[in-house]
Length: 389
Ligand SMILES: [Zn+2]
Image 1 (tube, rainbow, N blue to C red):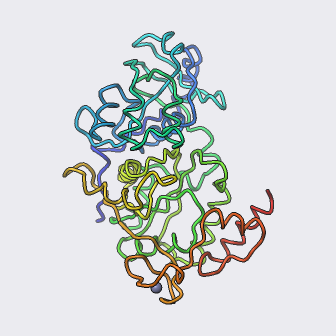
Image 2 (image 1 turned 90 degrees about the vertical axis):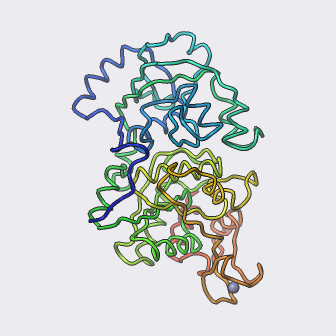
Image 3 (image 1 turned 180 degrees about the vertical axis):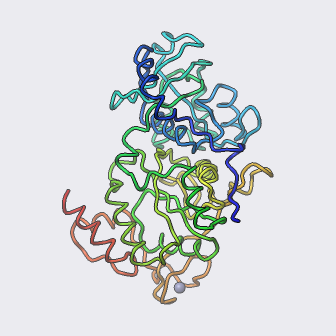
């Protein structure tokens, strides 16, 4: 009998999505409530709450949870939580809402009513404190910090009841796997040790190698990609998932990996985000998270292995899911194969490395990408995409 890691500080996965049969009535009621527009990050958080990926949260955080999460990576009740999950609104909207009022949370982009929330608390935050502790920088050029600095002046807290998962289940019927479902899939396969691989890019051989190292030491790997909002210039999810599937079909034994996606929006908080990614994966039933070089980082705000080291600072019991720390991977001409910086004694010029910018350039001009760097089936899909732009 296989045994998965338990959900984070909870007996069960806490999905905040209302059962389908009750949604129509509740939506009618929600239409009568004050509508509060949500930015893309808050929308993504509603979907994460809906599927139970943020177990044990039951809504957007109150002040004490926000502060504890920023300063000590703990909610007020002591539960480990490394990045605050908050709902910011403009001052004028906040002023128009009274505590204990029920409001409808609306996707500002689509206008859809997503959820109902009973406002339990209104509070303003020290944005620099959040930036300093969570992002380790107050630089407004950092994309995650920029969002915090630009967000509304007041946070609303309260329990959330979700009425819609938006476009995701329809757009990604095979990929949109909720934590309760991934757990059932793992159990059905007899997996107990499962590693998650977080990605927001198509997978080249370096990523394939990371996943294969994990396959060697676990029962299987959950290739888990970001379906939420990305940076401009990133490959769209539809193209990326086809490229990843081509790699799985051609280069993995059947039944060793599962491709899936989830609705998170990247915050690019580096080390703190690696911890959040691990916490989320615990809810999905994964015992390990692959943490490579510069996990969830952006620019050079973080040291290449800060996201690995931060796991060593956690207190006992904070998290069940462990990092699978792996050094940078590449093809080495002198090793005649895939290697990591931990095992290969050769120089940088013996290692095949192509930066993201170079790849985009090569793919859009139709230049050859060496098979040591990327599988030809993957390159073909990416070239077709760039040709269509
Ligand atoms: Zn080598």
